[in-house]
Image (cartoon, rainbow, N blue to C red; front, side, top):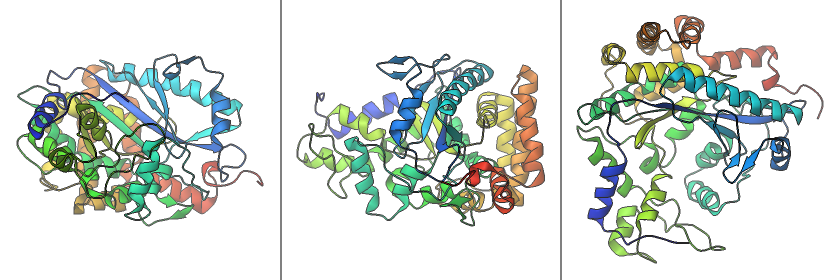
Length: 424
């Protein structure tokens, strides 16, 4: 393993300040969508990773993994979830078209192997959850989270999300964009809540996935404290977060000393001096609701059924990148009074996760945000407008969210994703 030059606290702070918010006019958008993989005939059975690999072996391969027509990157989560990450695009509709075509290819390959994609924030089936990943990162991650209870293991093996990525913005407006991304959080959690089940049973929460995140290590899952300078807040957040793993040569475990933060490592030297490569790797082990990676990655939305990820993509990109829609969203969110809250543990975020769009204040704010986004998409003549309007009418306008469909299906036994189609 090759590691670069030794770090100091000062050089680490300079590096983080320079790379985490890449400044420039908003121009690109991207989306990442995750799904669970279920057996078509017996969705309650675990799916062997070899079976998924065999089904996807029909796809062209490269050193970076399977090649999909529109260039989306296919990756696997520790519990066997699959994720498609779109290339960045200048137009959200182009981004959506590309990911839709790649999702169709992925779906067809899995279907030929008797498998299907299930879009849900938590695995709705009562089935054994297995850690399929064997990389030392994930082994260390599992042991780290196990110290704090079952939540980390549930997150790794039993949750899935939609993440929308937008540019950080200019020097003049990046702090406002950072603030808006966090203020939108409760509305996005509630509108797209889609994880009411865990181990096949209702939890009493519309977004159990958010509940899981709220109970995990706060040094890497809470939002940074609100500040006028996001760079400073994020720099302190990264350096003061506990080390989840410490990379070592092949064959050695990656477990980090308990309680050691990256700043502590820089100060005491540890078993070896920290290097820039270690700092960059450490950043990938932090999971706040909004993560700056040069661009802003909004991570708070549950995975959606089918191509339901298109609606979060349309909503977030419109509200973040259209100045008129952004101002309308800020006005709608102002009355919620959640400025300064530390997601995902604050009361408003927990209300969104527990109640979804049944919360009247969140519902009102969501409808105003959807209306602002709809007007923005209409001004641009975007084909994403139709899906956004249909979603708003089906869910927020009726005080519902996708989780309510799962609960209704569970009551009636009508949804194949929530029941066994045949004896196993």
